[in-house]
Image (tube, rainbow, N blue to C red; front, side, top):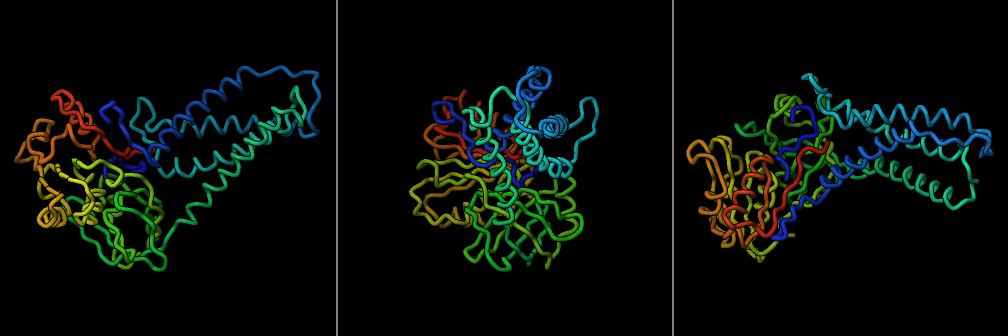
Length: 379
């Protein structure tokens, strides 16, 4: 997570074995698969060129359209490979996130070139044919979608000012208040954050650890890579932020009446935001397990312990691996106030921990009704 889109939390199986990670993160991964498919299809188109020799040209722009298609092909190959490959094979060279992010935006411009190419290149049908109308309609839809994606962040961005910074052992906790309009976000969602000072202007997605009715937001960000370390070292009270969001569907209110929340390390952030908003009348019984390597890394304990002390529908356990050993499915099931087989499992933490717990519960005959999580790595 050093230079890639990183969340402050590690990202986030009905009895029918369906795993759910719905939300913007799922869209990103579906988008990635579409990109790989597009790369394969344009390679097929390039090497299996149709022979339209002798057919009428659609206009005098044919040669220009041919050139547009050729250069768009080269551009697509470069940018799609850059998007798919994170580390150059057989090397330790990692493609920087900022390079990927800025170059990825040019894909929309290349699509415009492709639309121009298919509109004016030589073809065996005229512009009134059903196939031409179909292709032109989708080209227009693609161009409008690209325009929308470029404008949306500006429409959803809010200005904030930092009023508190706490550099705790487990994370950098940042609190900021809105300068005008507040961010519209629900507990468990994430937003894109950038600091308006040199070296920190690049937007990164982080889970919102808390949002108050007056618009005050809190982020708990672990220094796991170059950007998050620079953020820890450089951010200060009075800094201006640009926040965009909220995004995601990681919210317990969509879940069942019995839930187990499992947080691994900095994956506690969405649960911290959700726990703060519990008031006891949700109609849900919730058991929270917070797994850390060492108690000193834990953040927000006062919130979890306070809510557990006053709410009848919320219980909390801190699993300190340095004392209690590695958390496994048996320990989770035996220490839970709720039977995992009768509950939803809401997870945010390292994927290997999720996979081990889900498999272990299945082996114990206590497979949860549903497992909700989000993927932390968009690319």
